Length: 179
Image (cartoon, rainbow, N blue to C red):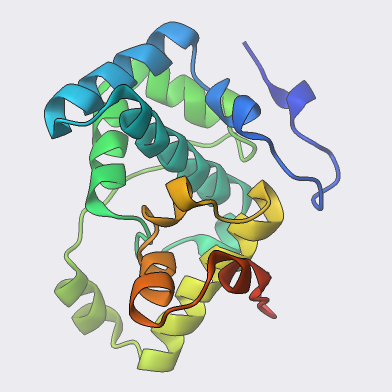
């Protein structure tokens, strides 16, 4: 099953949520939602939001490897946990990566704690901020910006919203020269 016909050829087109959800078969989508709900004591709707944000993360990673490759995971731990579960469904995960995501390559996962990431790469604070903003700009252009349900799962968005008091409209208006 290929969903290429759903993905806009024009890179400036917004990818709707129903297309992101269709990256997995309905059975696999439901399985991951149920698993996530049970593992985290979440409602099915909250578990579905986690899965959708995981799929959006994978979509961006696949679509923009030159801009996002090797950057620190910008999502909250629960989204990463969903990714771990997907990886364990090896046949379905390989198919997702190689047949349904835009880059058509297997997306590998390498766990690395934040402290080790910072120590190994010796990033400057400005570089870390620039990398995070790169994700935000590409997310906004690809998916039309952050909604309340999605914003809470992206670390920088949560920080900007909760700690700096920025509205989601202000966050969605951020532009980056790297997008």
